[in-house]
Image (tube, rainbow, N blue to C red):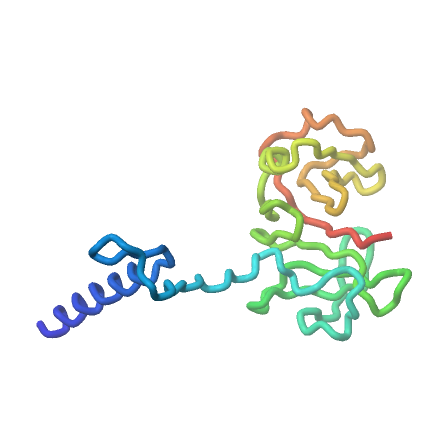
Length: 190
């Protein structure tokens, strides 16, 4: 029973404290402003966005703890990559070494469903073509004649889509709205 009263007292006390420290000017019972400076409680600093990958093109690969050397195997062959992990240690993609600056980060590929990238306007791997078009109304899609891949491209990002196109010119209206984003590529400056 005492615990119930204690919790109620604590709740009322916290409410009064938060109300008293709201940062708004207060008045006395006579209606005049107080002479004391109002106490302003700053909200806690926001947590970094999920888009903070902790890495960018041009960074030294050896200096980044989130990178782990590995090999990517695909239908096109085997490639040396550095797997990228988020703060929780989960693999969210990979980077390739910059061809023009050995030892430095080149392109960054985000491949884990639910992950996003800086500049992606909240769009994540696994979302749809319709979502991507809503976020980037002027985005254009292109196919690759060799790999039959489809990419939707902005100035800094490329979004790989789960639909195949072996023609470079793609009519966006032919891409089904529910086509999924399978990868976000952060292009290194060239």
